[in-house]
Length: 330
Image (cartoon, rainbow, N blue to C red):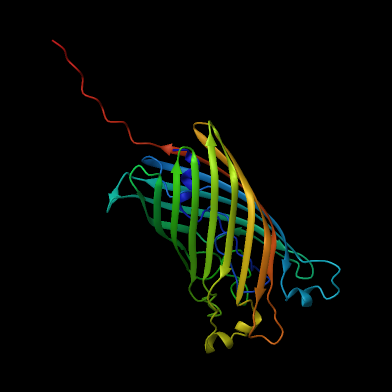
């Protein structure tokens, strides 16, 4: 199995669009498109490492930009640079016919928002763990299914009046996943679907609604090269919540987006060096919409731009091959 499929393990990147800018609705813990290039397969037993970096260059869009840029002479820029270090553990265990694996990921994020917000933040983001993933191969058909549960820990530094003044977020996020793949004859046709379910902000008690992600891969491997089109979708599918204790902190669901939808398309190219595998893919967000119909003046904003990812994956350790008994002949 090409080692680029290590990314099947988890949400391998994080991008929180709301640092010191202090908009709480619509945060994304996992960068849309992070599962691109992955599959429902699992590599042979061993300990693997992956390094993923990406840059995101965008502008704010949506009805809320009318207040940010009243003259319409410029747009508010959004920039991010992220470095992710992760480990994939494949002990060779099986359960209910599925292969087990586990993941731990630590992202480091640098991001900024332009004029008139002029906010910057950099540092270590919330740690991401996947204590269990299970992958089933459906015989020799090439079809595979993987499911698991990822968790963003509430272990980031909390700054600011709402806890969002630093790089991390002051709450837990649970990310159940379902990955469906056809991986045969060099093809990787995969739909990776996952949901972000957030707990309440420990400072403001505000709860961001659930987000649904779908990352799509359609690549072909010929020799050592892999290439093909990719795409992703992300959207908020439930409303934010702000109880009485939240309102007392100055928060309100009327201050943020209650729904948004973003679609992106792009392409991937990869090369298998043998000991390591490198994949690069770029995506352009072709549609980005946000709204809050309950607000008299809609404050909703959403970023729309271009992302370039690069991932290097390799095996750190493999179990010793079993010793073959000596053959004796008379």
